[in-house]
Amino acid sequence: MASQHKHKQRVIRGADDQLWTDFEAAAGAAGTDRSAATRQFWEWYVQRPGAELPKRPEPEAWKQ
Image 1 (cartoon, rainbow, N blue to C red):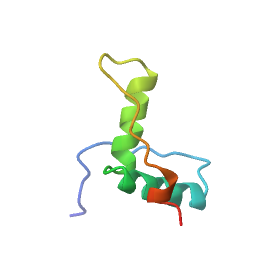
Image 2: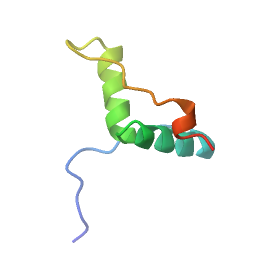
Image 3: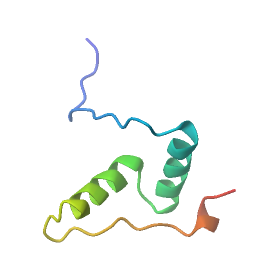
């Protein structure tokens, strides 16, 4: 039996490969991952109580 994900998967369209790679590197440098950073941004965007923008790393921390 194929493994089942606990949560429904969502798709983000229009993100080119370089954006995906840069986001992965930046999220890692900030001590998080793409999914967590995306959720945190969405919660801030829809004004959930207590929500804050995700931390952004300095470019030197992940750009090469």
